[in-house]
Image (tube, rainbow, N blue to C red; front, side, top):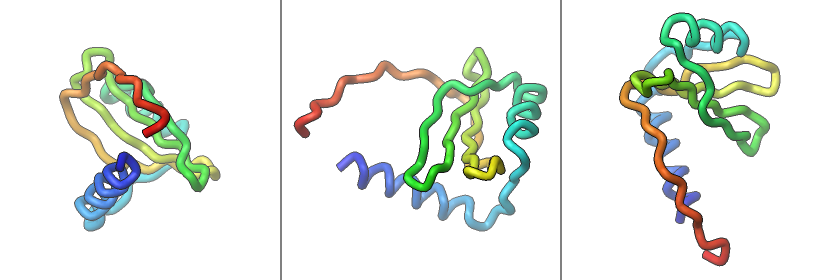
Amino acid sequence: MWKTLALSAGLALMASTAMAQPQCNEHKQVVELLAQKYKEAPVASGVTNNGGLVEVLSNAKGGTWTIIVTTPQGVSCLVAAGEGWRIMEQIALDPEA
């Protein structure tokens, strides 16, 4: 169920951004730009099935956030950005489910 929900959300996000020109650059440059312009730093990350790195960056006050995906070759692309990021309490899931 969670995989289906995540896949649906990912497809919706891809569809909404498909018309936009991807904004990509070297990982170091992208992270430095987000730090300088928005005071954002990584707050969460994960690795995709194909070896990509997904990172969520946010500023200390949660005012802005950005999601980037970095290829194994070190190229990072902007996936989404917005305002009002908040950390939610993690709920332990039943491993048997």
